[in-house]
Image (cartoon, rainbow, N blue to C red; front, side):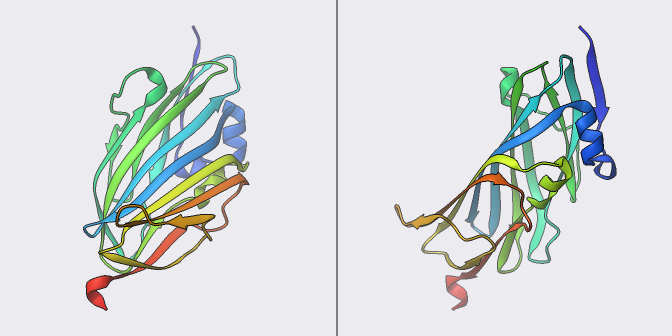
Length: 196
């Protein structure tokens, strides 16, 4: 079987380059949470191979470089569609990670990425504007933000949530977007309750 091997460098991650490989990033389901001065990201990223040959590539996954955020303590990534939970990160640094992705011909795959980043200030940020580099909006994007009621007071968000509710001592805000091309990152502004 013939396979296509492509290395996607940040500067080469242009719409023209991605169209040539027929790989589409079409959906993400992201849970963001604040706990013990740490910002946790738990994401599912959906990719579709439109070609008749397999795609094997390495994607750059950047972390937010915000003065309110410190170092990323750990990151894990796995290809859920591969039938195993094997590590898909050949290299990780403090600005981002390189993540391997394989998609069979005319198939889809789900990449699971989780990481924890230290909170130094009163905001947390999740990068979504890089979606523009794929040259098309996401068909669907689902975001959930969880903050414990006893620790953080949510001041504002860069996107208006569809709904917020309070189950079991936490605040949960939900955002659902269709045909979504982000024009800004998700930024969570909060106050620690002990700071008041």
